[in-house]
Amino acid sequence: MFRNEGPPPAHIPGVSPGPDPEVPGQRPAPAPAPAPNRARKNAPLENLEAIGTTRVPQVSPNIHLLTIIGQVEGHLTLPPQNKTTKYEHIIPQLVAVEQNPEIEGLLLVLNTVGGDVEAGLAIAEMIASLSKPSVSLVLGGGHSIGVPIAVSTSYSFIASTATMTIHPIRLTGLVIGVPQTYEYMDKMQDRVIRFVVSNSRISEERFRELMFRTGELARDVGTVVVGPDAVREGLIDEVGGLSAAVAKLNQLIADRKPAQPEVIQ
Image 1 (cartoon, one colour):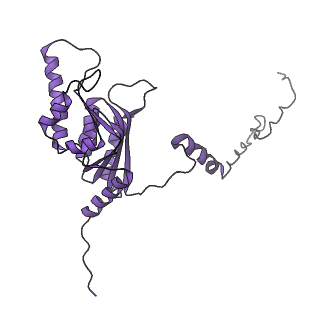
Image 2 (cartoon, one colour; image 1 turned 120 degrees about the horizontal axis):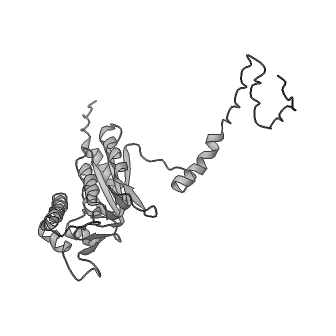
Image 3 (tube, helix red, strand yellow; image 1 turned 45 degrees about the vertical axis):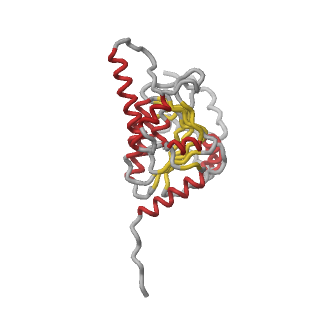
């Protein structure tokens, strides 16, 4: 059998030629080694795409920062244009905070419009059950199911211009018009009320009054409280910003540590 002997393939610059199949025992040419500084050169670009800066700020290793931004996404996937916080991403972080001995405190920053009630309650219950100190800071807004999350920490702050909307829960999707539907919503609402009352200084009667107030919201039932009002009502502990929240968390961490024995010389 004869073969058509054509011209040898042209060598492409930058590409190592492969082994010649006609030469038995020939080893393939080694792949070119990557440039040692390639990953380092790409790091600023990756940081810019991920967090908007070319330089990653260093955070205290003993404090874990957790953010609740946008809408709390639960069992249903929200449209891609929505800014969401997925509760399946939050739960592993809370477990790691509880298990990691190097993490001594949790800083929770909220700017949320609410979202899935059961997912929000799950996050709030896990934060409230942490054995380590935690501090929340409401920036912009902590609305709807964001209220239980905000009060779930050991101590809570709210910015002076931030707001919190308190209103009854709602059902989305198919609603069956039977008495059991109302009983289900009433029980779920009681769960939210009990959690908020047990983790803040507001009374149940006052919280229900704010929740079912009419005439304040244009197309809804409920109340909007601004930073100082939230503190006055007993929902949030103190009006403050980032420096106050970090200072309070460091204080709670220091108070939790055992006192060092005094050395007498």
